[in-house]
Length: 551
Image (tube, rainbow, N blue to C red; front, side, top):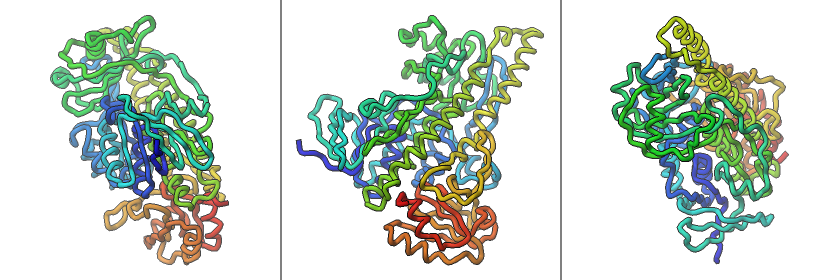
């Protein structure tokens, strides 16, 4: 076989692989992506795109396209808890609709000072957008219906074999690098011999153990729902715990129910799917089952390594979540964002020897952090005991519902109002980050303090002309020069030229931005992370060398 030559071979066409293909494609890196599925996801899968992910989609140019998908623009995005969907409402967190999010984000400050707010949209819609944009880059070759069969790290490159899943002829591939974004049963991770660390098999009444997933169409649901519409509906009763996300705001839903000990959900039929849905709903309703199957909650696993030589892993191949907080998909996107610019620099020859190893140094601690948060959320909702008297029309029932309401009102805010989780991930201790002696704010789930302390997301602001500050950042390296009289920046520009770094100085005279960043100069990486800040540029060469992996 004549080998197909590319810079990066990506195994896996889910969110991690597709975002990586976009990051590489926009930088002109020749990328081959293979995925054994016939196309992007049919099932809804993840249903929440966090605000930081939406900011990355904005940077890549398609946040508005994603926000237009999923629920209608005026559909509520509330999370609501009920004994059954037609029973008693226990708790609710009201959140802005997609249309309101676009308007409200410009007036929000503090923890939610952001270019984008979260968006409730099923992964199946997001993947279609990601694929379309990935395929638009001329250097990308995106092949669904193809699988990675084997690979070998030859030291100077990776030799691999890919093949159509329908049994067509295998194709040899020679790539500079290989990325396994090939899911929890990753062939890449397995062949590298990388093992999981963390916890698995955690049992809870809910979100711990086997779950039964149904993608269904129920056009009559809103007619029988006696409550205000929501985006996510959670049933809390002694018979069947379940949650359900609206897919299109009209008739399609992603329904997930806890499977009890002794039940054989693997053998359940469409009739069982209708029965279990009726248990959560509280009545019979005509339902069209589009797909159904089982999955396991109770994972908080992180691979012991995310790189071996020229081979990397990311997404579900590198970390497995119980999906409370919606952190799995969003963590996978951040993996790709972090790795994309580094692989591009390595291909272009501008990466220092420490750049690619920094991927694991930076992303693995974040995977440990995020899986821990997800496990905490799962414990909060899953260990709560739904007693039989919750549904009683009695004084005991009213008292049980009041107790449940207190717990769930606190829980829903803890799990779904998480700016600290969303924006507060940091790369402290990374060899690429140049510390300035400051201490970042505490890492807490439900509060975020904007800070330009090196290692985290840059503080956001809306400019007088209506633009987001983030919209003014360069696609690669940005040196912010802030305030009416910022220091000279020529030494940074000269040092960037010597290292082959694409750096642009972006000037904003507003004193408020200088105060927000607590320094007149700040270096922002291509993945929009503050690498350094300071009062003058005399150490520019050393700063850029460290930030690009040369030091």
